[in-house]
Length: 140
Image (cartoon, rainbow, N blue to C red; front, side, top):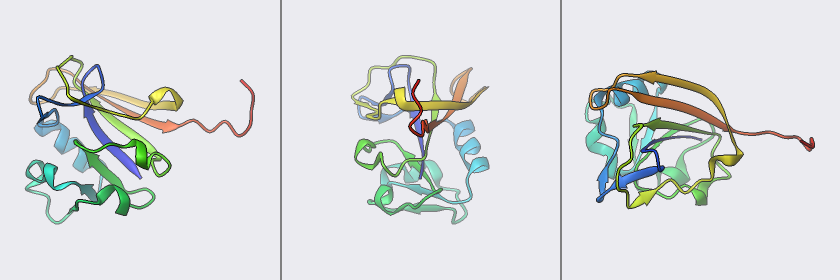
């Protein structure tokens, strides 16, 4: 599965129990990238105009299959790390006080794409697409 997460510079996902992901341009960008999107009920109000493209389910991370996209705001990802093929980060390029952080260590992930664009709430948003490095037994 491919997970989509909005984070601050400290990889915070929620601050003061509020989302960091409310930006209309980010939602628009997500819809350009996906045909179907799995989300938790917490995220439903972000995707009201989804034309049936969004699957809302409490157990979405367990149910999503290979190649499917999941938007994550308030879930731990480490228990699903063996299923994750890509992590797509939307970075706000700011530091917020956060009480919930991304729990996947990105040191073993390879950056394959970085794009910057102007959001509706931030002058600059950075989208980074990462994939797990495949070392195939090679020694570095």
